Amino acid sequence: MKRYDLIIVGAGPSGLSAAIEAAKKGLKVVVFDENEKPGGQLFKQIHKFFGSKEHKAKIRGFVIGEQLLKEASDAGVTVRLNSTVIGMYLDKEIVVREGEEIYHYKGDSIIIATGAAENMVTFPGWTLPGVIGAGAAQTMMNLHGVKPGNRILMLGSGNVGLVVSFQLVQCGCEVVALVDAAPRVGGYGVHAAKVARTGVPFYLSHTIVAAEGEECVTGVTIAQVDEKFQFIPGTEKHFDVDTICLAVGLSPMSQLLKMAGCEMEDNPKRGGQVPICDEYGQTSIPGVFVAGDVSGIEEASSAMIEGRIAGVAAAYYLGYIEKSELDEKFEENKKALEGLRQGMFAPKNRGKLVEKTEEGIDISMNLLQKGYIADDEIERFPGVTHKVGIHPVMECSQNIPCNPCQDACPKHCIKIGSNITALPAVDESVDCIGCGMCVASCSGQAIFLVNETYDEEFATVTLPYEFLPLPQKGEKGYGLGRNGEKVCEAEVVDMKTSKAFDKTNLLTIKVPKAYAMKARFYRAM
Image (cartoon, rainbow, N blue to C red; front, side, top):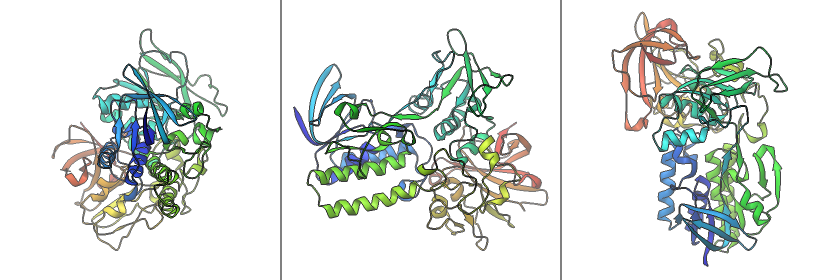
């Protein structure tokens, strides 16, 4: 039986982060993962992450995955793929199926970083081919280059449902509706807004009545629900679709921990059955740690920090570092973790209706109920300004942990401050040079450059654009409003691409002056 200082189960963001920290302290580390490729969910993530520079903000998920793999390799971590851990016992022994063979390994310490599995909901027809999870859709699109369907209904308005809906549109699919039984959007408003302005309609307080079809999905019926989530008769709506995509939450994959005898609890705020653990991620079994979604559902950025904490804690448990070093590293990572757990979407606010921002500004109810900020609501936010000449308009209206725009501006005209969840504001005393770095850096695609004095009749709007084919200069089309409806005719006057923009192209359209603060997307004629 082969023995390691540390065995890690799961090569996702938390597992790799833990492996890197532990290996740097001198531990002999092996990581097992059942998949063909390491990185967990990261390699499906083509969008830019939120947070700060320390949290790898404005870097796309798959790039973060590549960085972690290189760090792990450089640190001497062994990663074994196509290796399914099927058992774990009290004495820190694991059983692994590799191909057709069964092997036993012994660890002096173990970190479980198995992540989470997609939840499903049942309704008539839910077993038909064409009903898939949002994670499956991402795998098809972003790993295998396969279009999941042509006409798709998305169930779920959390960040997963919003992000995948946008990626489906990027893939060339038509998302006919985004549906959620909850009365308000569950994910970040900036994610919802970028989906809405592509023309995807939101149906909140609705859910699926039934999927239709004989051998595969051919349609779906939804209906409005009351406060008790019961169907309201007469509110049924039918859509012709070939795919139904489910993004209805995640559940921690904690089976190995139960098998080993770790004390567990049913904690809905953390996603379900999770282990009871201390601040270092150590379970009731000494030397067995957890990190990432298996200990509570959060974003990948939080999972990486939890992984670093667990990796250092394992090193201390085995005597590779002193208590003083553990304390120092823990405080450093704890501070980073607390930064991500602030704002409207902090764990303490999960499920609550937050009606005002930290600055005391009324939240857009239209955003929560329809997915976009209404034109008569937008002016209340500090990032929305009017000025002679080109200037940024930041339609960021919720306190989320993110500040790349502040760092991106070479003239320092964007201010967030030391509190990472504060709403961005524009320093109007500083002249914008129109470089577009703020537009390209925004992980939520919520920043636009507006020139309301382009000429006597027209204004220009520069917006983030991540669709192919790219519009050409001189091309005529339509400016779409925040709700995805046509508001005016538009002409492409510029298209900028740059390595510094990291594949977020800057599209500049010319629109009548009256629509400078309304046109937020472009569609060709």
